[in-house]
Length: 286
Image (cartoon, rainbow, N blue to C red; front, side):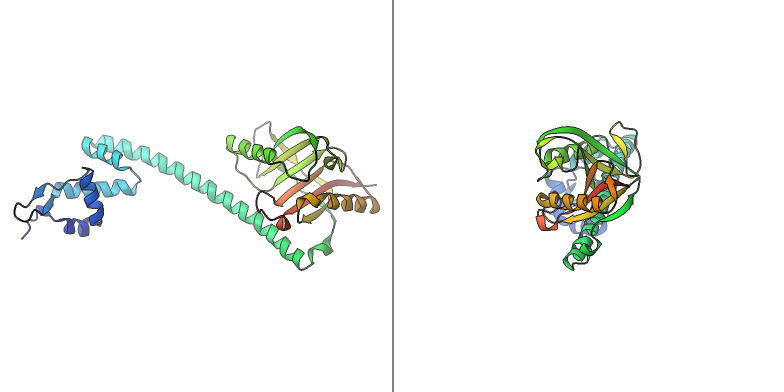
């Protein structure tokens, strides 16, 4: 009969709730090596002290410590060293929680934007969305993180990947979370962005609130003619022309720079038929 001072690997598995395979691995790397060996059966047994050590190992593994870290902690066997190690690990865990929360929130915003776009696509497929056509609406005031520069010989048949990535990198660099759609504004005469001219273009990302950065600005707070362009972005010039015609016929005039808000962008879905873009043209009554 086995002494209460010695525990077989099967007993350790049950008491400490650690698989035999894991215990054997700990043995192979000299983390916890059974203290006793039966000379007749050649079976190996753990001491009470080693049972305590195994429980400590299990607790530290649950906290995310690596085996090398655990080996050093067990070897030092000092309470203050254990305390310092656990405190340091808690900082790491806290940072991981923050990073996961940020990922979750960004995923939620992405999902909400996609839902908005999918709802539009559903209505468009039923030919219900086209009935709304072009509308005059108030664009609420919001804030953008933005980059602005002149692009040579520009034609917006395609969205600029470089400018898009530049804005995302600025957001990451300044630890600002992506709050929603990206808005592109053309500081030019209407339709100039299609004519291979040098165009001053701003790429902006919605923020929940203003931040103390020179790259942050207000957007909105004006009346605009808006509509939704569904489908290949390379054809969006036709939507711009229709809107300008509508504005002229309806007793309005353009009084600001034209913007495009990407609800489902070419960088979200690689299917041109499912791209959804809102065109925003500031207007005033004549």
